[in-house]
Image (tube, rainbow over all chains, first blue to last red; front, side):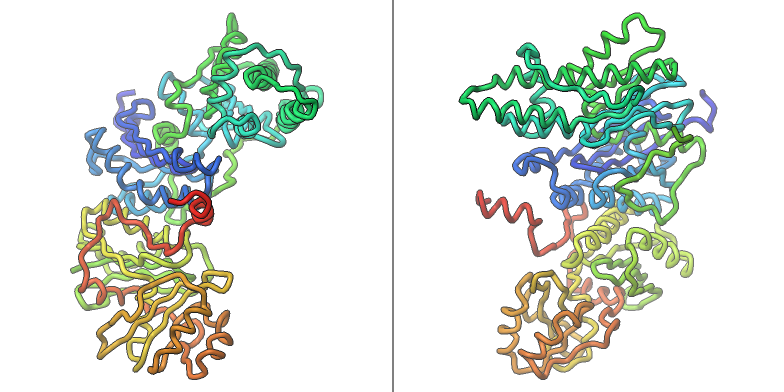
Length: 344
Length: 229
């Protein structure tokens, strides 16, 4: 470090779902500023994110958050080396607001645009706390993703397992709605689960022998059936017990599969990424499993688990070092795959 | 005033450089291709062809909608960001007013409209007197049936300007047998025309500016129906 070519100042923008976010990141690991305008309150009344409503809110906020990020970092556009933006995956209309804004500003300032994969961003959130050490395993858990990813080096991704149906965060939100908890349901279930014992036996989907894939739809249905059956028999189920049992089943599968992945591929670091990384049950389960292991467990602080632009700037720095930039035709890619290095 | 103007509210993509009343360069295409892929390349081409620098610009102009939600958002977001990044004023003009300039030589009324699905249209009514635009009816989102009833009260001939003329041609001709239409594919006058509209306007607040969708998001409309505002 210390060489001129390795220092960067990047303005990063993230608008893939319901947060309009901008950040200024120095050298890929120092947060000079991180601004988030959340739309959560607006979507709460719908019980989920409404794409058209999200896109409209992004337009209201986009230049404001970019300006605020520069101001809080005490940086002028002349100081910047590049502007980074989430290319995908996400809601296409929402992605397009960030992408349009970044392409225009970067062209006005004569700066390169760095296109960042949203999940790469979540993994690189850890780099803002402590340096990523390779090879590493990433457990990506969010409302849209449940994946085990092996990384040999920076921006080298090998997917070892993924969900075959619901993403884990999605299962949380659906179960929360069934129990009658407000949106977003994940944190609510997590809170409630901490108040009771997991007394109900709920199924775990292990799938075929050796598979590192996940499935949560059966578990979700089991929760719904448990409530339904009790209702028909005129009994009530304690929502806290149900939440605790559901959470235990989810964490059991996530932790066990992650440990199986680590047996197949020894690594130096396990990083947890995505909104569900904020889950207390999962954190506790992984911390317990990590005790005495050779690898180090890294879970970013809560504020870096949910969508933010700082993580986009962290991931962008490595792309900047390699000279990977977008051209004028950069478009929103709702189903953008990670740049996989090899098939598995 | 050196101005960059952009319009992506319909299938047409149009980007132009103007200086005061003079059109310096303009790109307008009428093909069904993604605006996100094509807007920035068009702006770059304009700059390269003219030798202008972004920092020489003194204003940005954009069509505010109505139109395709995503299309309007790409144009408005890009324009906001250009204006903010260069710290220059942003001017916004109705996308229907822009289309109405296609009828600026027409002696009568000009009715630009866009298909808003399920028998509805985004539309307004304009008139040109010796090149001077006059708004007869404000832009709105209405059923074509109601709109035609309103137009039947006009005595002057009416020119319909629309990329979606074919969708409503028989309905319009049924209500107004004397209706005129622009030639197919010839509805867009080029976004440089908004330089005339900008002369009559104050710039908008760049940060706060949002498209004029003329319609709530569907989920929002349903929610308000159920719970009020």
